[in-house]
Image 1: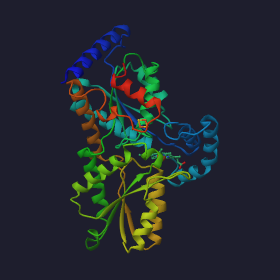
Image 2: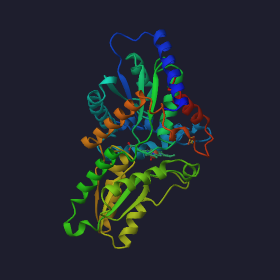
Image 3: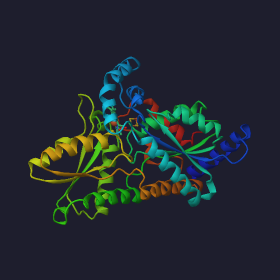
Image 4: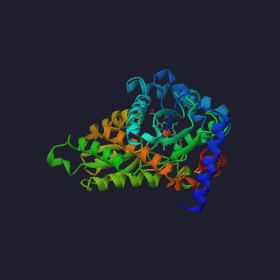
Amino acid sequence: MSGIRRASTVARTLQRSLATLNNAPPAGKPPTAIVMLNMGGPSTVPETHDFLKNLFSDNDLIPLPFQSVLAPLIARRRTPQIEKQYEDIGGGSPILKYTRLQGERMAALLDELHPETAPHKAYVAFRYANPLTEQTAREMKADGVKRAVAFTQYPQYSCSTTGSSLNELYRKGKTGEIGDGVEWSVIDRWGTHPGFVEAMAQNIERALAKFSEEERSDVVLLFSAHSLPMSVVNRGDPYVPEVSASVNAVMDRLKHSNPHRLVWQSQVGPSAWMGMQTGEAIKGLARLGRKNVVLIPIAFTSDHIETLFELDLEYAHEGKKLGMHVERAEALNDSPVFIRALADLASTHLQDYAAGRIGPTSIQMGLRCPGCTNAACGAQKAWFARGGL
Ligand SMILES: C=CC1=C(C)c2cc3[nH]c(cc4nc(cc5[nH]c(cc1n2)c(C)c5CCC(=O)O)C(CCC(=O)O)=C4C)c(C)c3C=C
Ligand code: FES
Ligand SMILES: [Fe+2]
């Protein structure tokens, strides 16, 4: 351990002891909180409007002039179209169901893997839908949490996704809404973790098995990730290279059995976004005579309108019209291989942190995008680097 890291560990331990003296914990050992960060989605169709209003109000995701006035207007205008999409996928987003299930199973595994910090409790903190961070903060405070891990559920880091969730957590944490003297550390990205790669590869193999043996090696693997505005890419956001690293890791695990491409979906509005777009790629492959495609959602861990609506209902349907055979690799959802990977990530983090091998944040998280002008990013990173104390 370096001298600086040892000194900061000692300082944190002292701060923690003082905080404990000031706020006696409730009877019984409070849980180690594993806070699962994600954007969330409307669990029922009537929640769509509030979800969109929260999303368009997020200055870290979409900086708008007069945001507090414009956001409700845009949300109201967009609600009917998006409500229809949630109706078409069965009446709501399954993200809360899957995040809860993943969290509960992960916490049970963690109690076995790392009994030193047991009991573990998974908390869900969504950015735009219930349970919002403020609701989760109240629950954590009531539970008397003193040690918490912010665990992003986005495999690859973007300042518009994980960055926004961390900024929100920082705002609630620094005002004491989550409790006083809570010691934080962060799992900020994990897009090449072997368990995540294995779970993705197994789902791709299951989709490939739906093609005849003669066709199988010729199937194009089309990895599809939510796009980013070029303004975000061009300020140095790490998401695009991190998604590419995930794709390469999965292809290595598959021993490059098939040709592949990484394409981008779900762009919103008239500005320039990262391409090539998924829909255009399917049309282009059809034009080039490629008949067989597996679509792979690589940047999200559970089903959402983008898998169930865009990939299944729009693109797969479009492909079929063009005479193609299009399958989709399942999202990770309740994959036991994936849930074990989450538990491994958290237990390795807790172990390394307790042993002083890592600090509260990764080395990579300390660096702001070279083009960043958002002061919240700097304050948030500094706060988490001090363990939130
Ligand atoms: C890793 C995934 C995602 C990134 C990166 C991302 C960036 C991003 N998104 C918008 C604007 C919108 N996104 C919307 C919905 C939405 N976004 C993601 C994921 C990422 N977004 C998901 C999974 C969803 C859907 C939720 C679901 O339940 O399926 C929407 C709302 C829908 C719509 O109006 O079309 C908007 C708007 C921006 C601007 C952005 C990067 C800056
Ligand atoms: S936008 Fe990336 S650190 Fe601020
Ligand atoms: Fe999005």
